[in-house]
Length: 541
Image 1: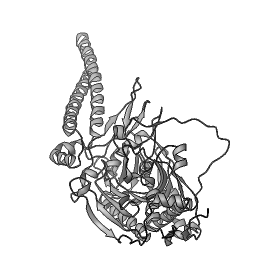
Image 2: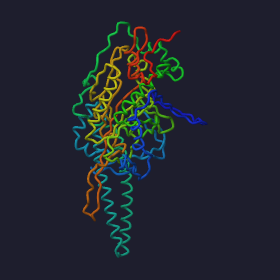
Image 3: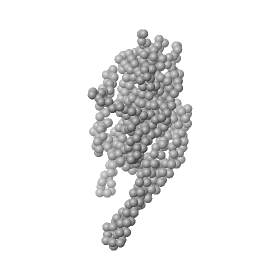
Image 4: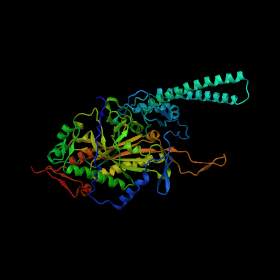
């Protein structure tokens, strides 16, 4: 299967549009307070502007080309702009356009000094990363940097000599020497930029390190962390969600297939209310935990997808790209939410930042086929609520536990039978340090199916997105003229977790709450968000 591209036509609009949000229940006062915090967490970008969270400054804007922190990390510059329209594929996003320069603060020295651990990690995660190539390129770059610095020092020495009184012949010799050094420097600096670009390209394939407690192996090696409930016992033949959707006039795959193609669907009647109920109930519950609600752009620049750590996947790409641009449709709100604080310095007092984001998601589902992926289980477009946290490194494991607990509480409230899995090394995506999946019992499919995941990405994404924080330490007074120095910045840790992926939640609810007469009971927590509807009944024909 080739790369997926979209061609978008420009349509003039003569009216304003807005997205409708269906709330069928009053919002509690504490929820309104959470909403009121939004403007203090997300502000328009302005150069050198300090953004405020409450009374103190929480976000300080930094130029995209700012150097790395003081830990010795070498930020590698990537410049793909050239006179040729070079086509690149990043996580399936193909484009023909000059791209802006950006820097990924990858700690190559740490990778070299911990070669054996990194090599074992690459093997355990079944990655094809070229560690040897990365280390070789890094050492070549370090040696070339030393050579460049040496020539710069020689040029400075020549320039100093030129300031004194010299014989004409000596001055002429120094002028020629300066010209020669300049030419050599230009050549070496060009070689250095090319080497840095090549190093960055090769290093992108190196995955994050892995939590020591993660099981080693494939998906079958994943460990059960927790199991909740038990499968419902039915006294009548079980219908799957496709049959229930057809009998109750809730889902129309046939018309959607004619309009859009396979793996698309229309929701109808009570199913529309059920989607809105799921999302609004989820948002209200998660907001009680201090999460700020967001709706996100659903088209992002390819570089943002790349900075979030997703790699090209060739024929199995999951991302739709827009033909003739450097933009993609998002596969998850994790990507646009990750970009909100890109190239920013946060104050430690503002952390953790917690978001619950609603978006539509678009995935090619390349290579997916068979009965296990039928119906709503695997589709090209769906609605999802995604949680995202930015925090201090020492807090990320606690935040990870919090995300998992929120997921488990939500699914327990809906009466689902599920298990939480500590996913094995080979099942981790490149950014994930550790990932827990939740699989729920789907009686119509006769198996467990994944309904959510929660990943701790540590600083893998923040090093690429340039998201740091400044510790709240006392200002140090330097020895030079009594100047004060701010504490060195550190990279935040990022985490993401699914709060509600609508299609798979519908599979669970329709199949688990079906009745012998073909009706479906609405779980009690969702009823206030469905206008009090308690039962979806068969339609009279």
